Length: 239
Image 1: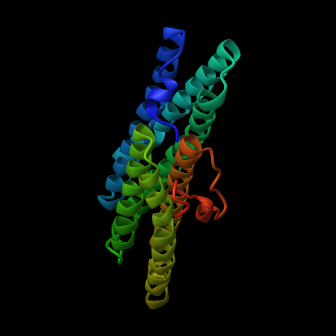
Image 2: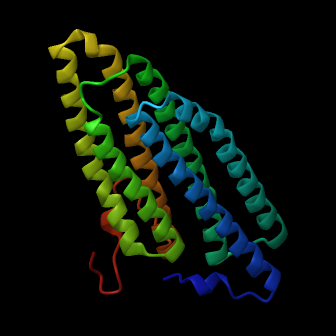
């Protein structure tokens, strides 16, 4: 099992520094994306179009961070030709970097829906579903990033399993919102915008799940995507 110190002991002290810097840059990006999601949800619930438009414009900052981290990974691979756990770390960071950028995109989409919803002035749902699922995926993202920082497989597995609950809640929320449209067709516009926001939140949960799966790959060297979590075994051969 990989431990943090396994990729911090190299003949070249500079290589140690490069890997730690890369890891910190990725976690910094994760913190920025997490904050972006929180702000987008707050803007939607408060129907604050001004704040929502700022969030949309700031999405370019996340895109710039993604490109910078990709360049950093490419440079380390070219210069150091890493192997074993070092290569796994870099591959995992490349994959997590991509998921974080997509989470940023989805958060920006939530903010765009906030702008549209603010034009309607009110919602019959009081954003109950969005608050609930938004809180769930926010926790998933935070726990996934924490699992990466601490190389905690158990925590990563818990995040993967939480995604099933988010999917169930998403289905229930969509049915609830449809009811509002059926009861009063005047609600169709605002409810459709809420549905698009919910869809973005559900996708954020998927990406948080992906990040957790990358943690398992990094620590155990096992690809648990596509429902292969049951292949994960501890030293005693148990789940």
